[in-house]
Amino acid sequence: MKKFYIFDMDGTLCESMKFWRKECTRASEKTSLEEWEIIFDKMRRHYLNEVSLKNGIIEFLENSKQRGIKMCIATGTRRDVCEPFLSRTPLMDYMEFFIDCFEAKAFKDKPDIFLQCAERFGADISECIVFEDSVSSAKTAKNAGFYVVGVYDETTSKDGDITPFTDGYVKSWDTYSFPEVFV
Image 1 (spheres, one colour):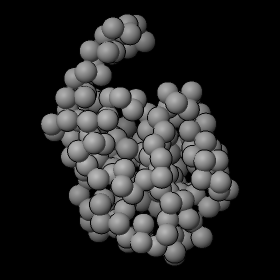
Image 2 (cartoon, rainbow, N blue to C red):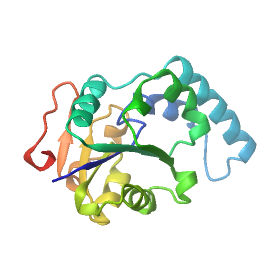
Image 3 (spheres, rainbow, N blue to C red):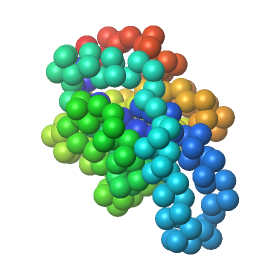
């Protein structure tokens, strides 16, 4: 039985990837820290005013919570950047904790953040499900041995086919039902 859910945030729980893509169009390896801070300030405003939850996610989280599932957010977005969104939505009411890649000290090209989540839960990875919209992050979690559920996002779906790295797929939280492995 899978008793622990590890959720990516952007593109999985909320509709923010289009804003990230818009703000990062000119970013590169040469982007300075000052330029990144300008991007982060713009994203804070998007999180405060425009980013919405994915349709049906609160109902999914509520159903999961009622079934005794422990949940967390594992995201690449710095906590201070997305805090306006977390403060104005009920997401954290369902989560045991929030961890970002900066706290984990590794980006999602390495499994550290997922492994740290399992450890904080006191769980074996066989008891966890990672929900991801990103092909590269899903691949990382899958290669680390996690059960991975891909989540459709209009923006990240253009990056390639996530399904080879997943055990299940959420086209829409509105219509998603729990497979046997979840129960």
